[in-house]
Picture (cartoon, rainbow, N blue to C red):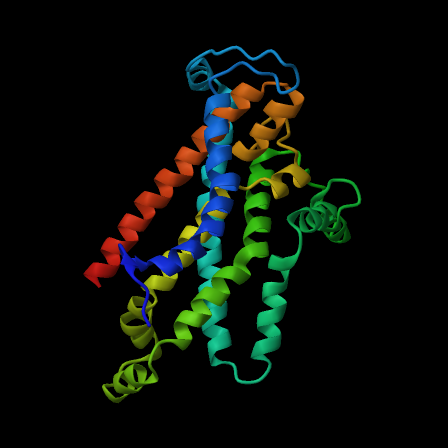
Length: 294
């Protein structure tokens, strides 16, 4: 006995979507609307006084040098981490796809950092990069090299943050690409070998085009994660020295809690949301167009 249909889905099945829609509305839609409305006020985050200021907070962002620095850093963290994760993730996936013994153990070891809290992993890397008694400077001292203030110089700290974030989440890209490689029919490579194609020619002409869905998934996930980066920056540098290594996420936290400017902090958060949506939309459009061309 079939149920009557209402629209695309049967009426009986429509109720299964209600819990998910309620959770989405409570934890996503409501906070978004609240954040937008809060960004139009001068609320300090603690008092009951909350005056409507319109778009003053957004106009203030245009002249905020710290925000511009954080925005540039966020793009560096997002794009830099994404590029490194794609290169390492695909390379590891190709190697593991060809290994017969011990592949499962190696996959688990490489993926393990993804399961570790960014705060814990950031603390571990802080002990490596710190100036006094840091593991990296101690190794340099063995060879007579001078100590380097890795986290007290933005020129060193920003690349260090990119590397740390990349190494922690490279396992996600590896798993995505490994699944994509295992979905490539072996017959295609066998036919290419019969035609005299080398491994690189086969990989470039057959494997890479068939990995386009994996590329799209991995790049979008890694880029969104990099643009939202907070924990590693907070643990390693706290946005310093000065405010030169802030990401937009860490700047939001400092603006809210340290500067007691909740309205202005909300405006920064709305801009970050718009940035992520815009970048994701453009990236998906480009990747879809590339997939159609291939």
